[in-house]
Length: 362
Ligand code: XIL
Image (cartoon, rainbow, N blue to C red):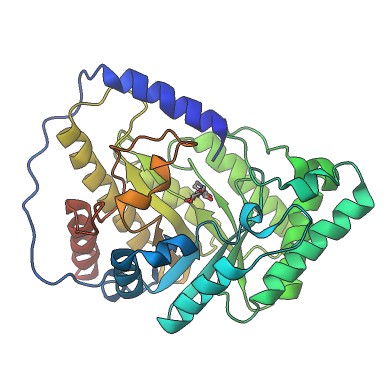
């Protein structure tokens, strides 16, 4: 996620503070009780969540992550910022713990992410401009990390967020500067495929609902890379939504993304209560949030089964959500997920479960 998005959300929050016209007041959601259906049991495709190894110390997170979901995405521990030490050595205690957790619970594992513009560890920065050494280090990183989990990783986000935030061009980064725009992308996919031929390989992007031009840039990149023989097996569609996303934008994005015919991973679903414009009361925002979760489920379940790779919610409890981290905006009143700070189910959980069940009965 780019820093300009942080500024963008910050300004949006300032705007939203002067609450003005918004949608009609939301109807109060009925409280729900009784045993929680397991989301993984309600649909024919994997339902995932994102975990950080530190979260394995939180009992309610462990309980929900191990029962509600049948796929785990490593939200932080397989990023370079965790793995790569200043001297270039790699640490694997975190991802190994997450892999053991997934194995113990019979869950698939999705590795996030090998190459990201926002991850530029000191070790690689010191090689900036020394092309031969940089290439060796880049290739060694991908081969070592993907090779370590070969046979255990269902899939990888190989290159994360290759398109600029404004959406009309490809990002420049430490990786593109030293290896080339196409070079860094092609190397990463080919090396990951060589290291783990059984893993499905994705490139992953955000804002594909609210920025059709960014969606087009991303899909053009994928089509161009596929035409060059790059082993891209699926499309990562992050789906970090703000509550004022217009009705229908989710379905429109899904239709265009699905037109490539590849498996789609709705890879980082959450619906923030923040907005780009004044939107109304907290209850209006919560009602819109529920509607948007329902739209994501409906759009995903409308896909052909062969394109339903997995539907992954970006975390379990609101308390650990990334939207509350300072680098994103640090709004501790935001509540984008399905369980609250104490691990109790919210109306968003029931909305997702009901939408899954309703769609299955069609
Ligand atoms: C976030 C994680 O959730 C946080 O734990 C971490 O501190 C920062 O990154 N898009 C992405 C993810 O692809 O890697 C980001 O995840 C959220 C935005």
